[in-house]
Length: 585
Image 1 (cartoon, rainbow, N blue to C red):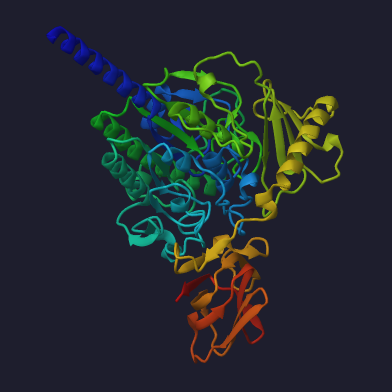
Image 2 (image 1 turned 90 degrees about the horizontal axis):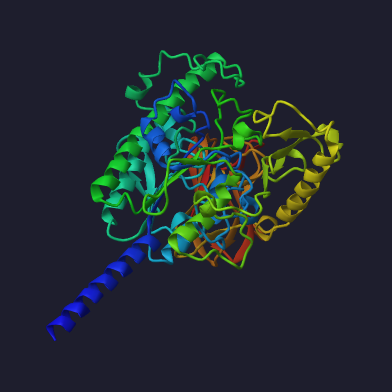
């Protein structure tokens, strides 16, 4: 009997250990790190002799390095594709502002999919996919969120830091779980510290940490101790004789580069603290860590020879570093040179973490796990589409497709001849210097045909035709602040006073108190008008002095979906509010 009992106990322990090991493999922690406007050349490991990034460089050496990895030319589209595995136009995201950086709430994010597998989820930093219900991180799968608003701190949409001017990155007011909170210190330090605290709190359960630095995006603000390390360098020299193209830098470019390098070194120091915490907690082996950037550099500097900057579809705008480390899952310190993209992160994590990729919509990404594991892939001739123009895509304007080492770029008119396109053989010309469209028109036409097909498909996507709307009067968010980043109307709405704008909203029937904040105080004795579909409310300003906030109280609004159009007129001039607050009684 003792023998049987001992055998039973031994078998039970073996089974328990095996079950625990299997669970550990199936539920690794996930840390996704993304930086903002950090170009391909802003790393020591990519040949930049000026920047000091020992932590990221060492991490790259331990990781699987995807050396042919692509993102979108600008911020919000990259983040939409990253979160969903879909081209951003499918999600409703078509711009970085102009009301085009709101992702449809029907989209399914990595956070939602991991949460369904009992992960605890947190975001720290930049979201840029909608600041109002139902598009906030808390509405899209994140248990904890600490973010700034809109596309960047100090920008017009982030009205809690905009008026801090050259101190917007320091001691900011941020949004913690949808509530305003004041923080001390520098923004990158705050986001990293809060992410580390989140990891420590949740070390005994699977977690997903999305650490989304807003640096080194403009405004280029950095603690002086970091700037002092770079203030005397000349970032335009010292790159050897490797024959990579190097585009001229103005004196302003050089000063910008010094600040960017200082901001990136600060990120590197924060990642050192993060990685040390993983080791201290004993969870480093069972944690997937990804490091990537969201697009190319905004300012001219070293880009490892690549052509172009943020905002365009040449390599310098869209090729990005991508390093992934998972000690329990696969061997690191190797390179994969097969075309891959931000679209592929969700399917890859699905395989590694054991969740299902959504089957009720088109997922454009492909799992990178077979590439990581060195499996032979029958077909690697996938296509990758890229574009960028303000508001909506414009046919053949800053648009590209690449496939099997070939890339076609359009910077021309909608009816242009094929010879006016750029065709590159990236296998022989990675710096996009030799246009082959006139000598290989057959290949150019082949790629253009495929580009036309995907373009037509994407511009007719439901979320683009019927874009996301902000819900007003819902108990999930009351009051609602409408900010400039999400205002549609004239192209390029920013901090202008006299400009036509509106917000696309769905409003619940009720009585509202409404505040209109202006960029700066407006003259007295004007007329405040609020149009909402067939409803309009008008108030006469009775003040005798310049004021920056006007109020309408006890405004009855009926249930309606449409454009909310506010404007103040006085002495023949029109003023568009900087933000609007609507509070349902």
